[in-house]
Amino acid sequence: MRHLLRTAPLAAAAALLLAACGTTEPAADDKPTASAEPITLTDASGAKVELDGPAKKVVGTEWNVVEHLLSLGVEPVGVADVKGYKTWDSAVPLTNDAKDIGTRGEPSTDTIAALNPDLIVATTDLQPNAVAQLRKIAPVLTVKSADASDPVGQMLENLGLIAKATGTTERAATLKKDFDAKLAEGAKALEDAGLKGAGIAFSDGYVVSNQVSVRPYTSGSLIGGVNERLGLKNAWKLKGDEAYGLAATDVEGLTSLGKVQFVYIGNEQDASSDPFGKELKDNSVWTSLPFVKSGDVHRLDDGIWMFGGTGSMERYVDALVAALTK
Image (tube, rainbow, N blue to C red; front, side, top):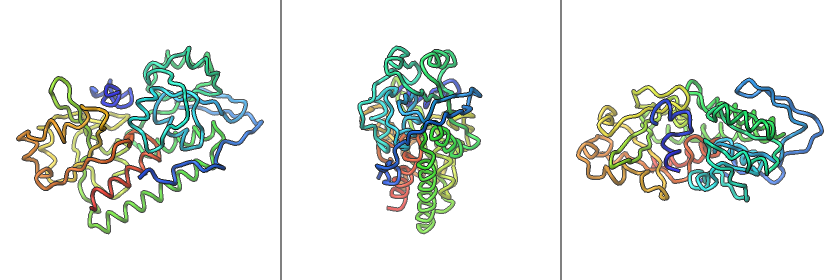
């Protein structure tokens, strides 16, 4: 799992090295409704996707689309790396017995074919030859993995496209409304605490061969976009990649941040995911940083997928506000 986490969703690898909110849980009457009307969509690849009606048996090849499906009340029949999803995304939990279809980069066509899905939802990170193979099994709806020019807007656009394919547009509208309300609530809480305009540096890190690598989330990242909508100022001066808004640095690179709120997410089930709390604990460069000295280092709750949907981002807002205002 750690390999896929630190490469982020898959396109970033080539470029860089790569309290869940009740409003995000689908209500009992928010299930997809049946319709005899055919659906025709154009996906992010420009391909025309034709369905006989709202898709019910859906496979998701990436965790963000799986989260979207679950938030919309659609339980996927197949999910890439089920164990990884359950480890890294508990904001919108996968509770059904979805079939594990293999890795996010190389889903098993045989396993997917055996599920006889109505629809396969993938992202533009999946290699074109893999998508071509999947199209021999069922219609494939490809959404854009991420867009650093408008990260929050792209996330919501993907949610809307998946909702059209599954007949859950009303549910999607509710999710968007609740998400906007959560952002407004979080922004007000931070402003009331005197933190409007405060500098924030969100990052994650990992350890390979005893070397610590740091991955900054610039303003082009989904987390960065949410932070700015909360009224915070992204302190990273590094340029991120064009999709995920992610950059790369090391502990020395943190010296340019100055006095900021430093925020990160790790995972108890991944020993290499918290270098800030473990490997760097006694590092002289780390301990000399202004935000370390002032105690402004915040590890947020496990299970918030940094590249997820409205559910993960609402959980992130709650966790961030709680950390910064305690």
